[in-house]
Image (tube, rainbow, N blue to C red; front, side):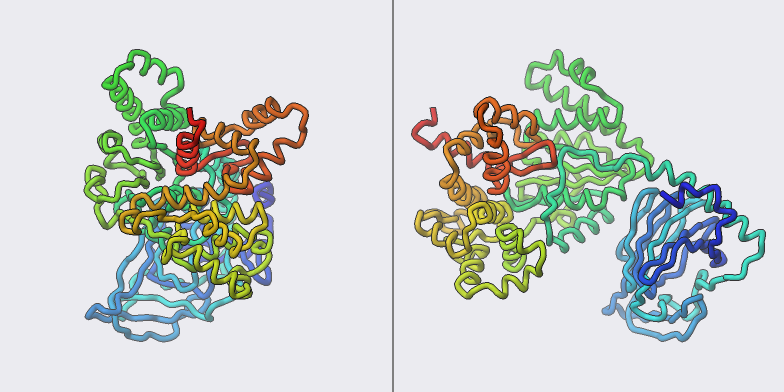
Length: 573
């Protein structure tokens, strides 16, 4: 922002300028011991050769659009390719013929406001898709190697090799300075624009792992623009999609949208919210559409009319967007979505569901290649998750793997038993059950041995009296119910009443002022009731999740377990 504020001074600032003919003009903005910042201005540029770099960098697109393609070498192919080493500055060193065929493995479009991380070893090309493209590059000054590499399928290198011109005449320098000034003036508007992420759902700040799954989503959306993630409840589908969407939000300048599909009413409400955000529908419009739709068939007609308006508006967006369709298990709702989604657009969409049959998603053009059956966490990742959440104060400052390794033998054995699925006490890597167990231990200062002994003492078995095979589809319910029973055993009477009361409301985004009002009504003489009952017990014990500063949520499986604890009890009526 400081540089933007001085945009009009650019013609007089002592900036180092250079040019790579046929490719890019460069403006050195800052150079320190560990970081260099440079502006790249592409004007009527051609596609670069396939190349890597001596160090890693981050590129932020300020203007225009460009296509980025990543390449790999298929070592099994019956072919050869050539690697040419290039010195800093662009002069070529030597060329080596090597086995394997060059293939493009990933392609993206990048728009203003989007970031791209390029590792030093990544082989890639850049092709400006507009005549005038500008980026800011944040370059690591610590070099991984003292040269870069150009890949080619023949000895002759096609395209510019990256030879740098550092001695420029006055006319060229003035042209570059003026282009850079205009770029900065436009960038001020870009930086002040609204974040593409404007959803009620917020990502969990304690999330970690799932790198393979993140890469799979990236590849799947690059291939077909659509993907589905399936598994039973509590496996972490929603959080995985939320994390992916949030981390990649700047790849979608037209926005990231969340469509809740647990039920028809939630689907309708989500559509209206998206329509309001796109300024193509309002609550008043929705009321007018639905005023005479009292019958079941009328409700279906309302869904279709709203969906047509919203998806037509999305289809008309000029830059990429992402639609996350969460918890779509109802076959009729799936059909409705399939008939409404635009087939040809700049949009991507990801769907989560508990339906494991790939045939279910054929109408959405999602084949087996673009359908991921989410695995449970492996023992190592599950151990890290359970340890980090149960011992959060320690794990903030130290290496988790080293802390686990330093545990006493009986604690390590108990941790291994809890995260695994080999016996009746294990939570089988189910993320939601692990979070519940960690919440119990964290809020009550219990060790892993304590928790395991408590499971055994009260005869809480994840699989209860079923064999693992019979319990496969019910496993998520029994493991969550097990850890929930553990937590509710220790809750005070007041907290038990509160969590049951809150489970009667919509599970997402229960407003904090509303919860505070309930607490003040129930405990008017206790000024610390909210902090003690809600924040200390229910949030720290993982019964409630603080979505962001002004709301709470309850996972749907926990909500279901709470309801079952009410209806199965002696006072359920």
